[in-house]
Image (cartoon, rainbow, N blue to C red; front, side):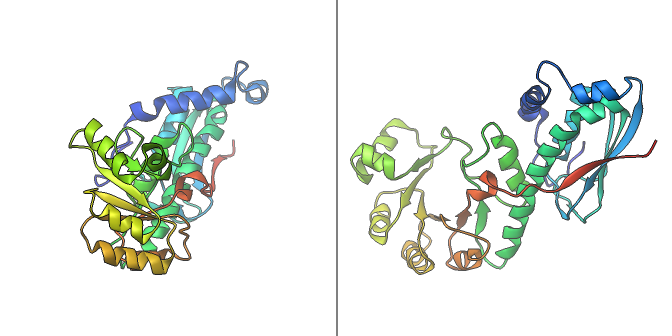
Length: 288
């Protein structure tokens, strides 16, 4: 399926194994015993994936690949692209071919599409809420195990940005790291000693005194953790644009505009990927 030119590509190789694991989990060793008992193997059908609510699409291509992985003779036709905003009742895609194959793939495909579009829709709402500020919405590593590539992709489809993708592509020194290193200074010294100049270093701080120390240590960014709006305003003023500031912890749709108004560069939200509401989407068969 072709994607919008402005949308970052999600390559099939990055999600092929996710689909395989999901189908293996659903089918087990016996397969779809309900469908195989009821539906004639020669029966053909046409079905539509339909949006039950309005929202932003993410993962449509992934979902359609579930059907073709079950049966490569099934035909799939997308009506929209990832990143499109659709009204309630929209037909997102049409699938035709073996009725058995369509029914067997249905739930796995809808689970993927519902989760990914739920993340994209929620992200879109937050991005819209702070559109009058310079802050950007970012996700965290609090993703569903095994689904990080899909979760983080969906945040970008919603208009957000990704924080580090894993433990291997950026340094974030948190409180427990400081404890084990014997303090902030030795933690940063060890990082600089063991890693190359291309690796960015972010330091988590909880207080203004910790922030003041951080500004003397040459870090690239500070994570302002669970600060009140008043404290956040003071922290951003103290940084005064010298390094990147990230607000995190306790941020909700209710207070996010106040957080953004503080002048922080980034706002990270774990719930965007760990406890998102599933987007309601269904599969409707055409009458035979």
